[in-house]
Length: 320
Image (cartoon, rainbow, N blue to C red; front, side, top):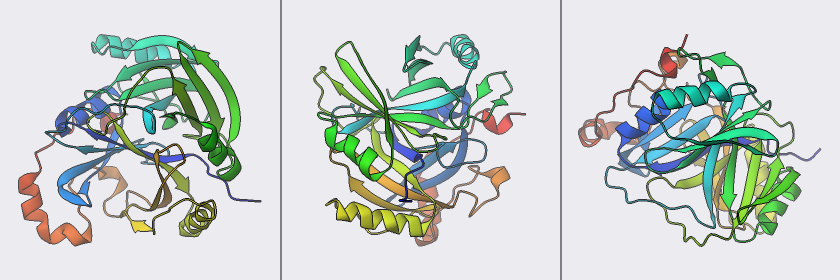
């Protein structure tokens, strides 16, 4: 049987000042800060990783925060939204908690027979919460809000979805799972084999004119899972046979990565599940200390002087 992509590994975006970003994702969305490190290519900038309690692939949203970042804007050739899965019956508790915290959200409304709401983070990134049975692990936070097992999906905005759809179905092993049109937007859903955590990808076309721009609130790239280095090498060979320009393997400390532009222009990555985020600190204390790759450790004093301090608010780390 040909190998297939099981789903998302992580999504990486750009934000403004790091403290507001941490406050929102930890205190408001109840994500765990699982890694506080630096941009390996620009060590004067944080790279913050959020995920579920066990820091599992398919739950990881990461940010490059810049104090002086200009505003980004979603447009064709970019990912435009990320969605977390919420256990069935859990959306009401989320709406109550968000309302009590004076966090504005849109909805609830229905998409492909699933109930959902949408909100934006402090920099304008669209974040959706969608009730689903796929990949959910039921848990309860300290405020009674059901917590999910990670991602539901990511949305890619494209001028023409045909070639991207063929990549998903003919190469990655996704299956078409529906089409819907509303208010000048057409959405096409695709599901990975197994339909576990982060298994859905939505492609949209829109009548809204927009020129995408990287900046605060914009998604930089979307990463898919590979079981190990051998599987990743297989994907590298397969993608090159499809005429795609794929990078060599790059060591990202917590996973190995390869990158390429999919036919619609979105930057894709395929990342390995191992070694994982507990490779340089215990699972119990993930995200509490600044972790640097070996090549930057000699610069620790200088880096720590440059990086602004970040305080981790009460959130999932404190959940019982």
